[in-house]
Amino acid sequence: MQNILFIIKAPFIVLIGSVVIIGSIINGSIDANNVSNKLDIEISNVKVDGEDITESAVSENVITFTTGELQKRGDYSVLEYELTNKSSYNANVSMYCIKSGKKSDYFIIEDVTPNFIKANDKEKASLTVTLVKESLTDSEENFYCTLDFNTVSN
Image 1 (cartoon, one colour):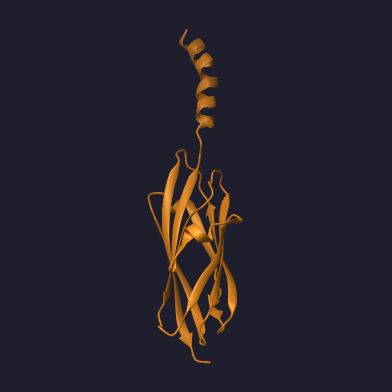
Image 2: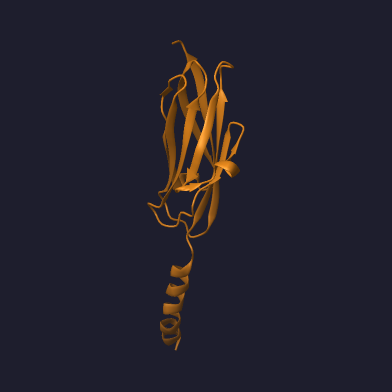
């Protein structure tokens, strides 16, 4: 009798287990620090997965954004933005990202940031967040990135 009950219950257990939504929402923040007061770097044209979020995402020199939902291993979300050097000095650029949260090892962050921006020039940059491990529960993770700009003599 127990075997018959198990046979009847097994498909429901499998179905319920496979219906569990696996999803992650990643919240990020990028802070742009002008180490030299001679630099004027502007952040513009901010998009997440092609959707323009510039007005809601940029405040002073900080980009705050949420990725699209990442459900399966290999799913990714892309943040794209432009950096405009409005000063008369060339600038070196460096990016540092810190992941935080219980599942920070479930995703990777790859940034494509220019190392150098000429005076009065514009460069495109991007950040890709990719899910590398699936989870049986929804999760929200945060990360914080810092863009540092230093003047370079012309």
